[in-house]
Length: 198
Image (cartoon, rainbow, N blue to C red; front, side, top):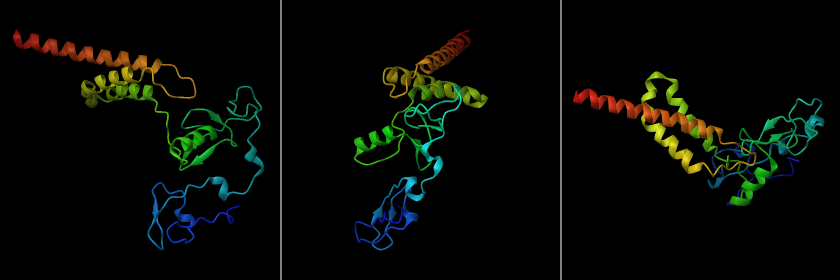
């Protein structure tokens, strides 16, 4: 199959060597220096193996593929969070995606790109609230990160975009922690004012 696929440079018609394929950045043609970007599925380079149909689900405790309930889940889609079997997993540049997310990204942009379209703002808010408290010398950053965290919670509370249902508990925890941080800064400011005035 790989021998049939022979991509050529659109500028000069020269065959594009495999070293140029699947690079994150466009590469120059060796003949005319035109930038080339080729993203090829991994299946193009491998022969069909017996286990590529996905491992059968044998225990009730195991997670099953979202698309094939009888197949064991191997990975999670980096875009939507669905469990995928070996048959449904599409890996490009280290990212795992499902056929639906790959198709959706191609429909939006006119080209197939594996990008995490579903931004998890609830995780971002939680990280903004918690990470500065982990180290003693970074706790002072909460003066900045707490308001930013509250902004993210308010701005994206109703805009959670994920095909897998997600609750808002991370938003709630982040908002509580950020509010406590701001109250602490306010109490410290009041204490300093009283100390100066007295």
